[in-house]
Length: 104
Image (cartoon, rainbow, N blue to C red; front, top):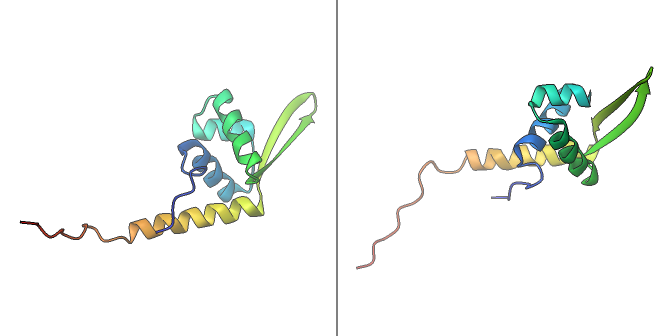
């Protein structure tokens, strides 16, 4: 079986990626509300995803208010799809491990 991507295996990073797969693009406030994460923790995890090339982060102003928006990259989508396929492999594994022969 292929190993699970440790970057995506984190609960918060996986939640962010899953949200972005479903909505395409989301701002920081939406992601924070949906995940229940603190602003500081979400910032750190978004930066890890950005450094891996899985998301693009755009910072701009809407009126006088700052806005941070995140979007999944092609690399991020490919990594997410690969992660999902790896999970499927684990789910298809035999429900019980084979019995070991007793030595005696």
